[in-house]
Image (cartoon, rainbow, N blue to C red; front, side, top):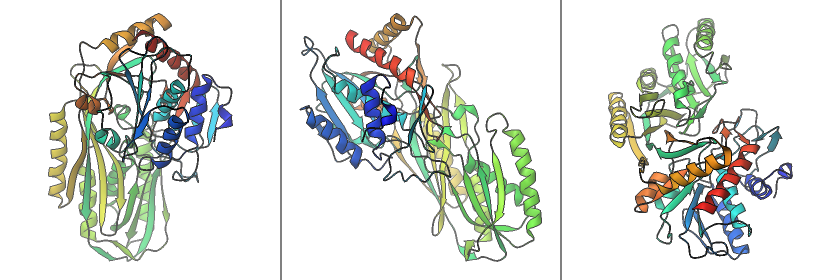
Length: 481
């Protein structure tokens, strides 16, 4: 099971277990195998553990010699990963291992996301549990499921067996930064029903690809184009030159990933020349507009296979107008922390069903009342276009704790090890810390992690040297707390 390409990397045990879990399919919603692996790991080492119906796993380990009676510490991460791949990649995320590769200082997966978010937390935790020469208080290792699709594992986990009031979340991707607060979030599912009609004319497929993509919390402020929203704009613009109906529209697979690709098939009753000319003009406009953020943007059109059914003309226009009016991106910036997004939303998924077009948004805000206002705004727009919407999977913001002992320990240890001050700040992306703070009264928690770049995209890569430094740092923190 161990991925031999990681042999020789240090810390050895961390990369050993990262290689092992990379061989286990663990996309959100596919948690049985990885959960069973963690349970076997604990059982083979005679460690007390439990798992629940949501496949969450909690593993306990006594404190090292002389520290058995100290207050325990929770180390927490999530087992699932975002499954994104390039159009050429043939990996089946439900059954196949990742194709792990090394390039200089980086580990990556060929053609897919790497799952460093949050596989590195799992690897750190397993390496700690499998070591007898590390100084630490009693450990309560909490590995949750389905974080990427709504924090469902953290939402339902029973924490009554946990004794600690301190938690280290290992789900951050920026070495030297300590996260002490994060945004809350909610999903909004939109369903626009349509009447079908028979296709007349020529069917063409418009493909938008090559966009940067990225994490819809950590990178939403970078201005990357969202393929789903951009397709709405494209369809609106060509409607002024060409008479058409929508056959189907499809883009994205995760609501927390900025969509990189979107395909739309349309049926036109006129000659294709005007449509092709319009698309070529838009391609030039968009490539110039997004030259700095999405330099590989590509817009193309081809004649597609015939289809028998399409969305009626009236419903096609209604869906295009709905798609165009729905907001996207940064809504407000923080008044307290310079450069921090306060409220945003991302249209991560759009797809055509039998009799409806569905869309999924992820709304985030560090102000719960502002998030609710944003979701209500979406509901009003949806109602205007005679569609339906449902708000679900809400999770609270993680509020800053002024008297945090953990913050001081982490900051002091970082300065002593590396000679520079750690950045202590908030993040717009959602972390499970808010849910655990709601479950454990008075919980003191922080979040840190090694450098991981371009998460939630097939360009995701994990810094080997950063993993080593942050492992050394974690061990130093465990000595001091």
